[in-house]
Image 1 (cartoon, rainbow, N blue to C red):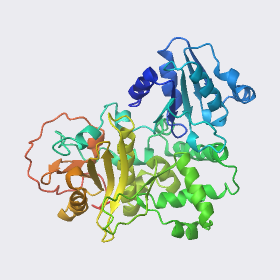
Image 2 (cartoon, rainbow, N blue to C red):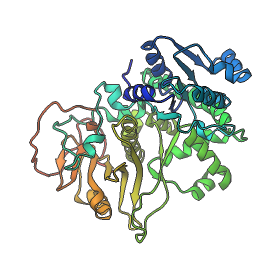
Image 3 (cartoon, rainbow, N blue to C red):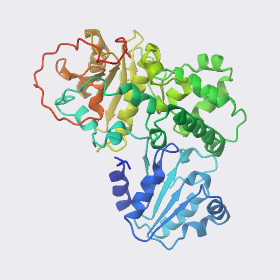
Length: 440
């Protein structure tokens, strides 16, 4: 059983908000989380709309369905019956006691075509992503406060050893059921069934579309482009899907939490920025399955390796962001001259942090050029930048610029290293990795 970082936020929301909705991909652990919360709360009623009889009852009488004699009503997979939302609104307006309804949804319910009531002002929406590596490790790490530290990203007070099975972590991903399957063939079978279930049910809940047979191939094409700029015209040609239809499909894949699009960051309209969003598949285990690669093949494929390492790091940080003590907005930065930063984070105070990902075990001075450009454009909002790389030594690179081993994202500090370490680059590839030092 995994301890989920989001649990504290859900508990806090239930203490002062009538309705709490946990959104997230199917099989990310929403049901397990709400059942754990139910076990700690007396007089709780749990209903899942994946059950045919329960679904029929909710469709037949939404008002009666939500009027349960309970302190807390949990409705799992609420996206199946959009009519429940007006009924819940009536109940909340009658009695605004906090913690009355806890809902889960495997699709972004605010995008449901039949949703007539958003419960604005009555509902808090939280996102449960697949497991972060720090949750898998049971470490409870959250790097967001360190990234936004007043003196800039702190240097983790710990050396890490090699890549700490980074390749295995990438191909396994973060879905609890997939992680439970050590046999790659059985994991592949799970991912295949998972995609079929989403396309046959969740996508149809959002839009009654034809051509669902095109979606698996589209997802495979997107997996080859993870961590790359999204060129819709090029993708339309390669997929053989009309431009407008493709845009609709991409919106559906976002709504079902299968892909993530990072918008381009821009603060200076006078600069020439690349405005295309950056695409990431939201789980590297799923991306590896779509690419048809296992750990052995990934280790020998530099292009897939660099892209999946970047997506893996972005996924890890975005998962930790869901339970960080403050809200952050995510984007990417790229100038027309080619300088780029893989992930840009902004907090509610407008402070900017840049995160660059390098799969290599060595760093070069030019690897920080994108962060330096972002710092210059951010001005006083700049909070610092960090390069997450495949080496094993945390290093300072001047004021506000640091390098962290990728494994710092899920390992706690346990061994002190000098704060003023020599800012040299790591000189060797982690032993046993079998990879050349290819940058991401």
